[in-house]
Image (tube, rainbow, N blue to C red):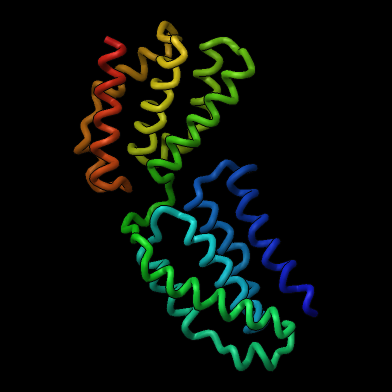
Length: 231
């Protein structure tokens, strides 16, 4: 049953990418949903448990930060894996067994060096969301639609995220305004709404949310520049 090794890995990765690309979720939400989908399969065997946790850990390592409770729980599960039992189950070839063992050790080691996240809510990271808005804006802009349609399309795409945390809302507003101004589209009605929201915003309002201090400072500077260009 050696084919299960690559098949399960591919299935986990595809599931994660589908949440990101098809459901348009943040990485943090996509990985949480993916692990939930596969968590029940860990009861099938020690091999399945090891594979799911290792791939889950490898995806986590691609994120800017890892929630401290997730890091602690995953490190515990990886450390407690019984590789003697995995060998006895004979579901892996010798090469796959060695590969899985090495990947487990790598994830454990790298988790110790990972920056920790202390905000438990699933949400976008600062740079991730900024980039996502930029990419989506460029896709819409290249379709040569009307400026007001660009505005409404971006808001529709990120409406759910804007309702999640104030940080996400302000990042979306600021990034959208930057793109509209950079493309010399300053006269659309939507920018009046953005200007009003940014004028009312105080960086202290997101004190307990997901952004790092340096990210808050950068966002604050971006807002000031946008408001200056809109005045």
